[in-house]
Length: 280
Image (cartoon, rainbow, N blue to C red; front, side, top):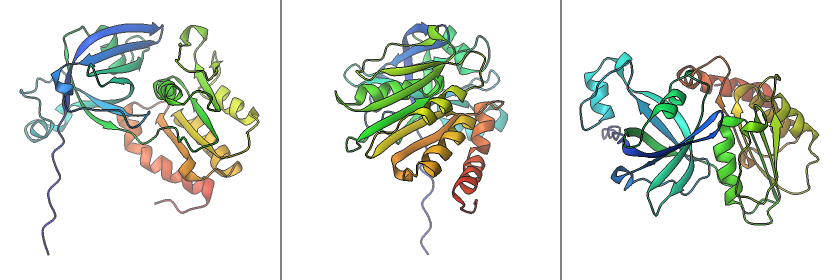
């Protein structure tokens, strides 16, 4: 038997911060550029994402930055910490990538970094990943999410052709968090206030009078409301799995490390509960 080839080492990209901008009280934009993006592209999916690599515990890594070498030479607790963000915009001509960060003061890792990072600083990241873009053959589109899904929803709306039928529901803390999106689709902004995350989104989608024809849906954000809407769309509305891009970007009470560690099991359990299939 021939030996299986070894896993191909993943090569991170590097980029420099070009500029930053506060979009709303809780959304910070960081634009990256530089020669390190020469082999990078994010132009096939509207939910393209990258995984930013942050030094763990103040660790200093050798140059050039090499994830495989770090994992060989450093203890696990000093491996880079990853945080996942959607590519809000990719400018292939100028080789600039735009990322938008939800921020809550000093809470978390990436948000505080985005608030304080200065032009010229170097960033390392993996990617891009991604799997969704609006299907031009669909009769209409449904896009639903909280702040974490706003960059992907905005990019998807901007990719739709003029005149496309689409319903977009975005939940944010309040009116000060609304953003301008370059699309003729009217976004329904839902202001959370003191309500649980996603409750307003679930109510809005349940109240929507679904048009006739095939829908292509994108539903992302906090895992609990995504679970509720998955049941509504997949089970009650019987929308085929292939017409749904639906997943929890995050989960209340968990940082990204904890959520990613449990996400596969969570998704398997939800699928088993909602569709009557055995969980893996």
